[in-house]
Image (cartoon, rainbow, N blue to C red; front, top):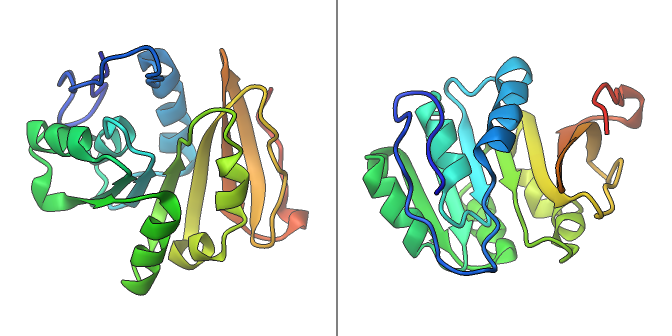
Length: 194
């Protein structure tokens, strides 16, 4: 069962879907991810986008750790909404029901800027490459924004796009976290280990 692992809502157990096609981010992996985030991309006052939110676990963890606001995008946001209510974060979050492209268009039209954007598309779908190449994504990134993609360890991890540079990547079991920032290719600093 997914849970909040730190912050103001620590230990709250989240509602989870049932079935074999479910791929939650495990506590140990999530803890490693948030150790990196807290040291390099602090969450205090952050505006967070959780794409392919599922249970909402990542965005809710951010809110628990001090993020100011979170938006969750998924084709089915019913589970995310239940967990938002369970954590009592209704006043600092919202959901957008739809696919990733629709969600990005809506947020771009609203001129919202995010400091932290999390992508967790289905493994082996190739969607992460399409999303990080999408100009609507660049338009909703704040000046010092970071895009964090959770991918299969078999997935291609592009090193740069028209607007983004791969700053770091970390492998945990069968998943890889790729961290992208806006910048030039000269800024590339691959300090993480794969």
